[in-house]
Length: 214
Ligand code: G6P
Ligand code: MG
Image (cartoon, rainbow, N blue to C red; front, top):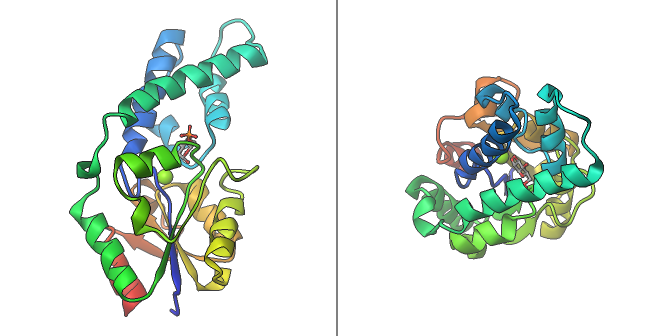
């Protein structure tokens, strides 16, 4: 496969902020008496903050919530989440991820982040990952989140690389669908790798080296 660029999802691929998303939503759910578990959480991967809230509220049985109340819940979740993020450091990036990024770059492969998150820049700064990428496409730059291809198409455009020459790395089913819809090759990691829906399933991020540099 003639890959010229790799576009990485952030949460759950480059860093394990997916755990912090889970903990923050769990706190909101518990306070409101809404059932929430890892299986429901898997549906939130790659999905925007407000869409995530709607999925959680599928099990809400209390009085109807106004748009303002929903906004307040999403803001509260983000405050809890950012509190976790503020404690992150470069140590939260595994050696496996760091080495893989370095080796891909040394081989002349372009690298981008493609994330639905509006906290992308903050996470990249806290973990010192920003300089490892040529381009970043994130939730502040798009109108439709995964499974829509917008964020990945934007990343390819910023890189100046044809979509067919891009490989998307994702832990979300919605993200693999987005990569396919963008006309890109896909590599699944973590949760998405259990589903057999991508072109490649990764046991660890460095498995990419064999796929891209072979
Ligand atoms: C990523 C995560 C989702 C999250 C979304 C928005 O795609 O996988 O779980 O809901 O980003 O994140 P944000 O940081 O903007 O709330
Ligand atoms: Mg993810």
